[in-house]
Image 1 (tube, helix red, strand yellow):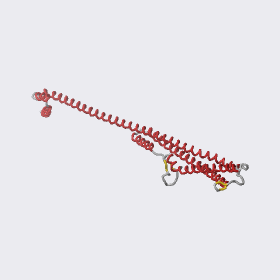
Image 2: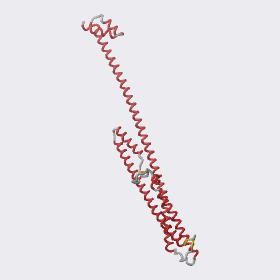
Image 3: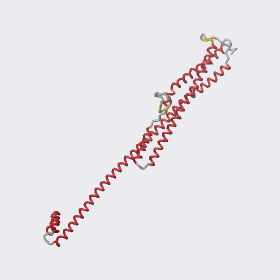
Image 4: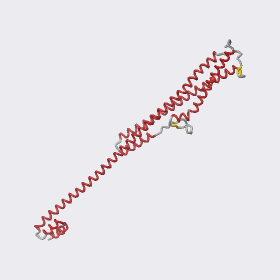
Amino acid sequence: ATLLSDLRPAALLAGGAGAQCLASAMGGTEASWAPLLLAYLAQNSSIAHEELIHRESIETGKQLHREAIKQERDQHQEALELERVQHLQEITTSLRENQKEADRDLLQAKTGTFQTYMIVSTLLFAGGFGLAIEGQLSENPPNILGMPLAELHYSLLGIGFGLLFMSCMGGLRLIDRMNKFMALSQEAQQNLLKDLRSTALAESKEDDKEQQKAHRAKFTKGLRKQIVIKTCDAWHQSRRVGSFSRFYRYRCRDLAAVVSLTFQIGAVGMLGAVSTYVIASLENPDEG
């Protein structure tokens, strides 16, 4: 009787065809309806278990799908970031190479100009020495423009010697200064490339993605770094420069103007001395 009272509510709660079957069976004996009830409950339990497994499998599939999408998105973002870094590296490398070529071309042009000044100054200097030693004026040279020709001749010769010597020394100083800057620039470039190679090697050996990202950010920052050369100890805008054109503008332009001016005046003075010697020789052909 206790078993019947416990199972009767379950039979009523089952509902549907199963409930009708159980309700009709409950009018009979315990032996007639108890096996049916147990079989029905076992069937419902199996169906519920299968539905639970099905729902869990669906939820697991959705979770795996979301994780796959997230992983694919992360891989895509990582690939884009790596491509961006590589593109930045290519652009930066190209810009650095173009900058180096421009600096070398400008250095070659400026060096060629000052070497020309020095060569011509040396030739005029040698000619002036020959004129001073071999080109003796007559004992009574004429006057020119109200000034004794001898005074004008040796004044022009002295001016030519002095200014051409200054032009040669200034040219040597300029070439030395520019070559030192280029040497410092090359050294800074090598140090930067060394740091970038070390960062890239550390990234390739690292397995942790966060550490790889940190190394990649450091590498990108190194690519964007502007090389600055300290040119002097004075506190002004020309103390640190990043290109040869700025270095020449701040540290060489004034000296270059002095070299050019002294060369021109010295060359005019030396040619004037030659002219006065020729005039003296024409005035006194027998004594010249």
